[in-house]
Image (tube, rainbow, N blue to C red):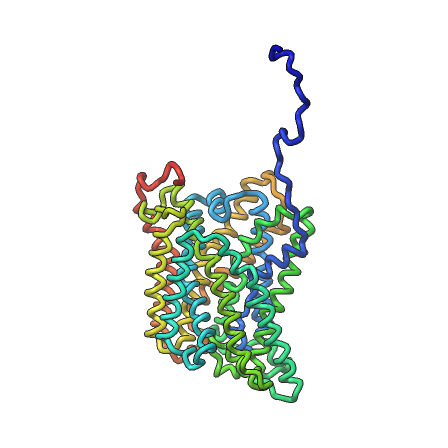
Length: 480
């Protein structure tokens, strides 16, 4: 039988090229995803010092920063892959793209000390509440937790993301409910609120620019929307459904941020609040009122577990993005581009860890742990805001230079949104250099030096030096 005589079966469905099926998600599901990645209890003590005015101070950055960032990022994500590096590179230039992705990574250098400072103060309530204001304890917890995270991440352990998957429930919703409901009952029993709750307190008292500085921290609370925007292509009708998802997420985020902050302000006087341990102070006071202080260590463990899970999930992410760009364009020296046997950028994590350790030591030398926590939070915010300034400029330029480029979603009034977002981000960045009124007794010059050195040095000077000193041999032809 010749080959020509062999009957040919009709092509089976399994033999045809497979086109990956689009996995659609509902706009409600996207709203929940956004809420879980943005909302948390950690910023609550910061705003609780304002009492009822925290509503205003949360709502304003939501409108002028969260909303523009969400809609603008959605258009960019639905039109161009590659994240913020590609958006800024195409919209402005490759060097500016490197600066943007560097800032995404660099903000974590100060983010982890502030996050783990919160973990240390929370963990203190499991063992000895007096340790919450102890700088040596705080520094030790930061160093141990960070290097443990590096060890886990460097081994390429799979399933680390699962440690943070229940963070919204374990570390936010359940503790939040256990804080707000007893707080309402606390007032309902006739106890006076520690903060006045009259209409005259809806706006923060104006005592100069320093009285509004704490609003800067809310920009960091709302950051990260450019990462969630990638899911816009998974909606069936992005033009209609994405705005719905964002507004629903905004409502849920505001509720999660505002209600616990109010509950804290009801039971803990502002002058006694610790910016790191304020959440646990409130839990301890509320549970004491109802004879349930034995719950305080349990809540502390829940909050710590959720925070550490989130840290592990994020630890290798930003550095991985920086590594990919650095290998393609040769922006980092070969030592920082090396991978270990598990394919993890271990050298970057180790260098980052050395800097984090030095920063942690500052907690041991700065007398007020709350002051150190605030300074690191401001530096984190300012470095990240540099990236957002570039993102808004790139979005406007891409709309003008590539008007016909296919986009799954087009943000309404893009230029206006970018203008509002850019102005708000720039204002927040500049205001961050002003010491808040709560720390008016401190050394203003030292405060400005810390903030300027951290934000401008890490956010601008370091990437500039990497770019200027780069060599052709730094570029990797293959990602190995």
